[in-house]
Structures are given as structure tokens and as C-alpha cells.
Length: 507
Picture 1 (cartoon, helix red, strand yellow):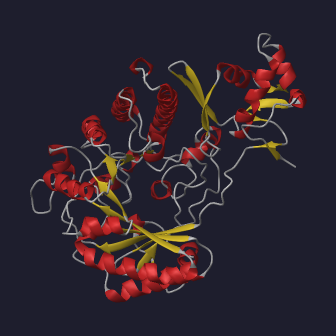
Picture 2 (cartoon, one colour):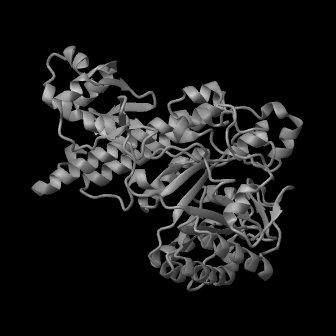
């Protein structure tokens, strides 16, 4: 039987007889002389630790606490014992019978659905995997989808149904979006299930009153953006010609004026990687939260990070290029990301030096690809379990990138959970054979191999390493470092506030 020990547990001399060993899944480092530890198998298990706790953790090799302290002759025993609860609770130290503390609250049961309102789009992004057309979701498909949402709510298996309105450009069908949201909310209400929604948009289409309506209905907005000025215009060109960047700025202004701070989605590819630092500065200056994603070949074969037209067809002729991102291309990506994260860190320091806090913390707001650093995962997405994509035709797929491929099934009026689990378009997106390299990796519970569809289409299974594995290995420690720095700056700002001043030298 295991025991959970909270941070405020009173130290006990009985702990001296307990064995302690470092967990194998721990990342660690120092920021401004302050040690930090992170456990990828824990929940928000990032902590700043005292020099004594660092020494205790570093020395833990399976011996008892007493034996470990014996070689730390200058360590006060009572103070060392007082450090143990934090190390145990986060799973930094392993002791038989003492369990990693899990969140006290019962996790919300959420089912996510991608709703492909339209294939139409006013932009012509070269890397887009959607097969564009003028088609949009007809009324009978909307009604069948609403029936399925109601069945999901009635099932008692979920607490919330969340729909991501997407396309194409979903704001081209804003009236349909409004009608669907209102009816879906009404259908979920009798079963005590919340209906929530998000809009995934290119930000260039904001009908009059749309931003205010989205704000009033608590619908979140994510905006795709790939660069500043000419870079954005090239990566996300207007269909038929013209600059998209001024239209994006106007759309963002409309959202901000309505009290909506869009979450920015950045796709990094060959065409914009050299402008990533400038884009990062642009976003930071506006206090916008954002996510970096690497271009994913989801169309059966483009080379890693290749965002050009015809890349998939080229790779069909040269399949040897469908390999891990390595060599100079890898170094180029790592250098660009290192510079971008330098900008994030510098901005964070300047903000706290001015005695301010960002509108959203870095740890809570920033993401990289499908990585989950603050809770353990076994799969990078909910495809086939708690997520489906629904095409404008009513076709259902485990992933939005496969909506227009063979193997989809027609939407039925039954629970979406059942339809997700009954999908046969791909094998279940679960690993069957754990590869040795991933099993040895400290970050396996944060990465889970990356996008399963990307792996499946390259290798025919989901058991291998992501083509971007070495990028992940470089980025994760940097994200953890910045998150630890933020915790330190928050602590310093809180301490300074208690005495009425903040010394910029601390930041």
C-alpha cells in the first residue's frame, strides 16, 4: 500500500531508514545559480530546489536517507528531512511505498471534435494538407453531427464536448458557425454537459460583429501566422494574389478590440525559419501567446520541414529522403529555435525587471508541436480515443489531415466516443512495440513519439521515433530552463512586492 506525502508533511526521523533513489525521468539544471528539477511523469512537476535538496537528490542512489546523509557531513539532518516531501511529491526521488502525488481533482472528461465547415479558403498556403474546393457543410450533415453531439452528451461518458470550427477558412461560414453553436449548446444542456468551442482561423476574415459575438459566447480564437510582412505574404499568400499580412493585422485588431487575445499558431518550415526570431519578437511585443509547430508531411511523403508545392510528389520519386531530420538541416532548425527562445527569455527578463507580469505565463501558454511537458502522455493526440474530425461531407476520420482520404466512415447519430473507437481508416494510434531508443529517453512521457499520423505514413506503424526527435531533444531542456527562470522571477517579484520595491538587478 502506498502513501502520499504532501509538501507540508512534518519531517519524521523514521524517514532516515527509507531508501531513496533518483527517478530516471528527471531533467535538471541551474538558472541564475538556482537549481531546478523536472519530472516528465509528474503533473506540473517542475520545482526550484534548495542547494541542500539538490545535494540530497544528486547523492540518492538507493541507500537509506541516513546512509546518504552520512556522506553529507555538513548537512543538518532535520533540514535535510524537511526537503524530502517536495522531492517525493514530484517523483524526483523514488522510495518504495511512497507514491507520486497526483492532482486531487477528478480530471474533466472532454471529447474534442474538429468540424470542417468548409473547404473554401481565401488564402493559398503551400503546405496546407486540405484539398481545397468551394464545398461547405450542408444542413443535413450539420443535423447528423448535432445528433451525434447530443448522443455523446446523453451517454454520461463526458463532462464537456468541445468543437473546433475549422476548414478551409471557417469564418467564411460564420452564420452557420453561430447557428451550430447555439443548437449544440441547447442539445447538451439537458444532460448537464457543457458545450464549448474554438475557432481556428487565418485571421483575415472577421465579419462585422463576429469578434464581439465570439467574446460574448466565450469561444476561443486561434490564428495561424507564419511571419511578419513579406514572409507572411509568401507563406500564406492571398488566393488570386495580394498581401495577407495587412489583412491579418486588421483581423487581430478587431479581435483585440473585442477583448479576445487570439492564440497564435506558428508553422515552421523551410520558407520562414530564418524569420522566426523576428516573428517571435512581434508576438511578444503584443503579449500574444503562441505555439511553434514544425511542418508535418501528412500527404504521404514530403521531406522533413519541406513546405514547397510538389514536395510530396518529389519524395515519391526519392523515398530515401523520408528520413529523420539530421545533419545541416537539423542544425539550422536548432539554431533558429535557439535564437527564438533567446528572444523569449530576454523578453521575460525585461518584463519582470519592469516590475510587471506577462498576461499569460510562459509555462501555461507556450507549446511546441505536440509535446506535453506538464503531464505524462502515452499518445501525442486523442485520435481514435477522444477525438474525431468531421468533414463537410459528413465523413469521419481519426485526424483532420486524413478527412479527404480513403477509409473514412460516414457520420452517424450515435455517440462520437463510439465512432472514434470504431474507426478503421488507420490502425489504432497506440504503440505496440516500444523501440529501445524511445524507452531510454528522459522525455518519452512528454513526446510519445510525436504525431502518430506522421509516423504511420512514413513507416506504416507508430512505434518509431518522430522525424523531429532531435529537435525535440534540443527544445525541451530550453523550455524547461525558461519555465524555471519564470518561476524564479515570479518568486523574486512576490518577495519584492512584500517590501514595496523590485530590484531590477535581481532580474
